[in-house]
Every structure is written in C-alpha cells, then in structure tokens.
Image (cartoon, rainbow, N blue to C red; front, side):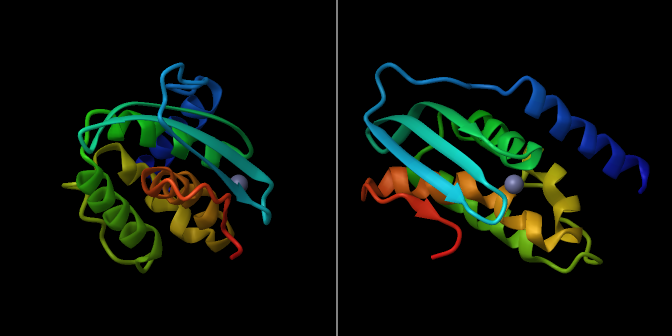
Length: 151
Ligand code: ZN
C-alpha cells in the first residue's frame, strides 16, 4: 500500500469514527433508506430540498466503515449543490468505483471522493461505497422505495 492509499484509509477511518452530518434532519422534506444486504449496511438520508437545490442533508445508519465514511463524505460534498450537480457527481463517483484498478484517477472533479479509489481493489466493497449515493438519488426522486444494492 502506498502512502496515498494509507492516507485515504485514514480519512475513511476518521469519518467512520466522527461522521459529519450524522443525525436526523428536523426540517427535511425528502428521505430515503438504503440497504446493502451483502454487508449489512443500512443508511437513512434526510434532505432539505428547495428550488432543486440541496439546502441541507444528514444521515443515520449502521454498517461498515466504508459505507459510513461514504455517507459522511457525500453529505459534505452535496450540501448546497443542485440536484443536477448531485447527479453529475454521482456519475463521476460511479465511474471512479468501476474503473480499472490500474488506471489513473482523474481527481480534479472528485474532491474528497477520490479517497475511495482504493475500494476498486475490493469489488465486494464497491456497493458499500455507492449505497448512500443510490439512496440519495432515490430521495431526490422521492419514490419512497427502499433502495437495495441487490435489486
Ligand atoms: Zn459495507
């Protein structure tokens, strides 16, 4: 493991221990739940959406360090973004997770999300990292369905 991956790992552990925006959002108008049965990760998202923009966002959940860190970092990245910006970021994150492990990562638009590049080495964990993002999309669409990584 090189220094960068070690640093990334540390960030994931830190977010797992002290997640940002953790808790129920009082004035949320969009919520969704996600479940990753392969790992047992659960995430519940609360969004306050106004004029197609995410004014505030928080989460509750339990699961592995990757799923929790991913939700934590996602909330910090999405606060203040419009729904279409959130969708764009989701696509870039998905691209990162499914790209070849040996390919270089273009981190320019990814911000802190780049720390999940190491997850590519563990295909089982990709769903842990993407769970909160799929749940976020469900919340924005507000279709009321529980998101499962297995359907
Ligand atoms: Zn997990």
